Structures are given as C-alpha cells and as structure tokens.
Length: 242
Ligand code: 5GP
Ligand code: 5GP
Image: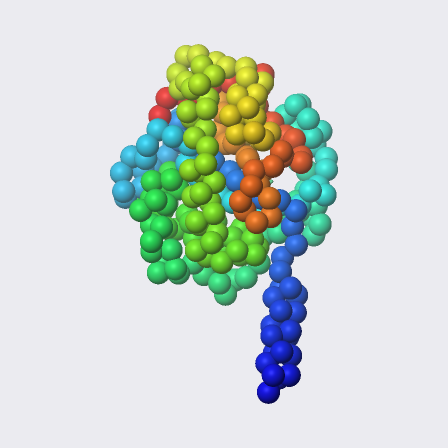
C-alpha cells in the first residue's frame, strides 16, 4: 500500500515537472493611462469608472532570455522574434484553463483598482484579466489565484508614479523629460533596472507608455532586466496628464 502511494506521488511529481513551462524571467508590465488614452485611437473607462491617475497593470509575462536582436540598446530597436519557437516568450500554454471568477473572488476589488481595462471593448476588466491569463498566465507555472495575487503584490511593492514624482518627473502636457532620468529614477527607487516602452500622442510626440520590470521565475523578486530595450522612445519624452 505504502509502495503504491509512493509510486503515485512520484508519478504525479513527474507529471507536474513534465508540464512545467520553461522560461527565464517575467516581465511585469504596467501602463501609464495618460499615454494609453491620448493616442489617436483613444480609450474607454471600465464599468467601475475612471481609474486612478497611476500606473495600471497590463500583465505578468513569462519570457526567454535567449532572445537577441533589434539592437538591444538605446536605439529604439524592437527585439526581433528570434526566440525559441520563433518567439521570445511562450504563450497560450493551456487552452482548457479559462479564468474562473470564483478563483479570484477575494482579489476582484484590488484588481479593479490596479488592473483596469482602458480598451474600448465592452468595459469589463475581467475580460482583460482573462485574456492576460490565457495568453501569459497559463505559461507561468502559477495557479490562477497565485498569478493575480503575485501581480498585485508586485504593484504594491513599488509605486512607480511616486518614485518618478520623487525625481521631479510629474504628469504634464507640456513638459518633456530625459528618458535616462526616468530610467535612473526607477532603477534607484526599485533597486532594479527596468525597460521602457513609448508610444506617440495624437500629435506624434513621444511619451512614456509602459514600464517593464523584470521578476524572478517565482514571480516575487525584482531583478535587473537581462535584455535592455527602450522601445520606440526618443531621448526626451512626455508623461501626459491622465
Ligand atoms: P506589441 O506588439 O504591442 O508590443 O505587443 C503585443 C502583445 O505581444 C503584448 O500585449 C504581449 O501580449 C505580447 N508581447 C510583446 N512583447 C512581449 C515580450 O517581450 N514578452 C512577452 N511575454 N510578451 C510580449
Ligand atoms: P496583449 O497586448 O497582452 O497581447 O493583449 C492585450 C489585449 O487586451 C488586447 O486584445 C487589448 O485590446 C486588450 N486590452 C483590454 N484592456 C486593455 C488595456 O487597458 N491595455 C491594453 N494594452 N490592452 C487591453
């Protein structure tokens, strides 16, 4: 009997390790709502109302380190798709594992605040969380509750807008800031080097859109980003008012 239990335990361990997705680190991506909204496409507020003027979560994305190309420096190059399986990351790892509302019921209030949808797609933030779970979460080796709790904990750890404000970088529709001072403020304030992504406002001006913090495979500890990119950013960028 003991033997049977032991072999069953061993078998289930093997099954878990066989299905464990291999990746190297997470990108924890947050979006500045002012920069999502002031583009030509615009934005819509979720059914819970206008989100706070702070960075909102976009997702927690498993990633491969072995993914080079596109300059990897400050030249605005976009990392090319040369990772394993032709991509720099795994995605959609389990189509049968849809996000179940009751799994995250105790997190809904915090998620509504910290992970609001701004896309004009019906206004339900749950649909955004669900899409992020299916595309990235199912590859994270975390359970549904763990994935969303880890994301909320990462956001709570460091308040990016407060860190930037501490360095004199405050939302403004006229001011521009050196990209390097944004990068330095985040590295100093969080203790880890992050990557930055910009987009253009309706007038074509470069602005800080997303911050990519890098996180260990457990989804807990910030690390210096192993690949550097400052995607689509100019030397000076805006941080528009939201
Ligand atoms: P975009 O083309 O707008 O940069 O990215 C579109 C989508 O591709 C993102 O929302 C995200 O799901 C995925 N994606 C883009 N870059 C990365 C990356 O570096 N790592 C991972 N894991 N996903 C990414
Ligand atoms: P990804 O960019 O991770 O591949 O996918 C983002 C998906 O979530 C897109 O289908 C996008 O329309 C949807 N989405 C819903 N709300 C938001 C939001 O606030 N920001 C972003 N970037 N995408 C959102």
